[in-house]
Image 1 (cartoon, one colour):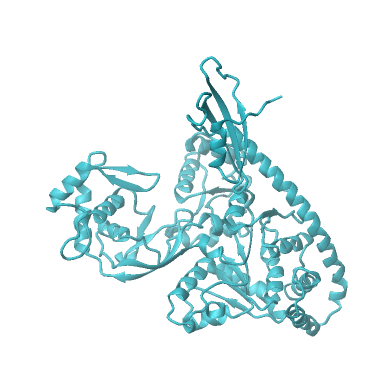
Image 2 (image 1 turned 30 degrees about the vertical axis):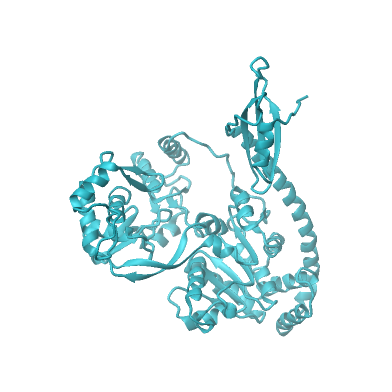
Length: 588
């Protein structure tokens, strides 16, 4: 038996941790003779599903003093394991309830099959009238609408929703995130809730990660919606205001996350409702939204702000002078580099030597010409020197037309993206090209803030359970795994952890060799990486073993062969190393 006792220290800790369940017990090494003891307090936060274990030094004579905490990994693993078990049990119960609705949808299939094309279109108008009269969208009309969409998909694109795809559609309609394995037909699943929710008169949004996927999905799945009498819109980069307004006015809209975000910002800068493009002319969102590749959009890019800025003249001479000065400053002597936070910190000698070289009293004083204090120019110049490397973080565009930012995940040059606060100009000065005008931020928003505005948000992806707690806490999106239509033939092995990247690379090379990678009779191998740098290091390690590889990381020099690399990735013995680009799994 373990006896639990609450001391003043425990009570103080509990009061400072709202939404927590706490357990306190004395440690076995209590010392009665000294009048002091140690107790541990395990807290479990019911909102964030996080846990911690703390040891408290307790003075028995003055129990409210002497609290010190130590996070214990085994306790967190225990709590996380319990979270996963609880979530799994809840999902199984939830899926069992949904399966009953799937069976009722299947019962309607025979009667829906007998309807003619005109009668199918008439169903859409019938559903709209029933909803307008106040019928519950989650009632019988849901099952009828899903049965109609399934039949329409079979007639138009010859794809019939499997039962598990109906499950996925029900999950999305419930405002959850459906985790579906690659190749299970997530795009087809989205037609079900989008059709149903569009019947209410509010726009249904389908969010994808790039223009190609938005167009592909609209062209194929849009046929189903048009057959049933709905209008379908597509937003692409380069569209003008009128084209966007017309597309957003449709019942179902396919759009990328970035285009939606920038349209939201532009609407908030509009001087009148007539200049807005989003539905309702209010600059706000209403209606149903399903996010494809939800983990990429809602987690990986969640805190990256979308920014609209205006160009103002940049003091080019100041940037060049700061660059020259930075070249003569030395690490440790004048500044320290914080690689983790991508920052540099000038020390006292650094400030004094810079002030002496520039002939100013202080780097923080505003000069008479109002061009700005010297401090940010020098710090950005040192950042450009120490933290930003050519052809890794950025590239010089053809004909020296500026600096292009390279996406660290995909290796793509981010067209139109610029670093803010003068950093972009500092890198241009470092490369000796013409310093461009600098940006002044006039509007910005993060994806996290953007998508939390939707009253009805859902998502689908192939990998979400690892981020389930964060998705539920941030977006109130519960993650529900959807069973596969057929048993998975692929063997999934446990993850293996290594202490160093070098050790992991060596083990990876051995696996490729064992699978026959690189030989005509071997198995095709696909290696996924998290960054361009990592992909190149693995290619180098494989080359040392005499294994030829194809590198798929979207750097400019690889872009021309990208489709060719994907097309040949499944041939015997071909080894392909790719960065983690959302939406490419099915292609490979």
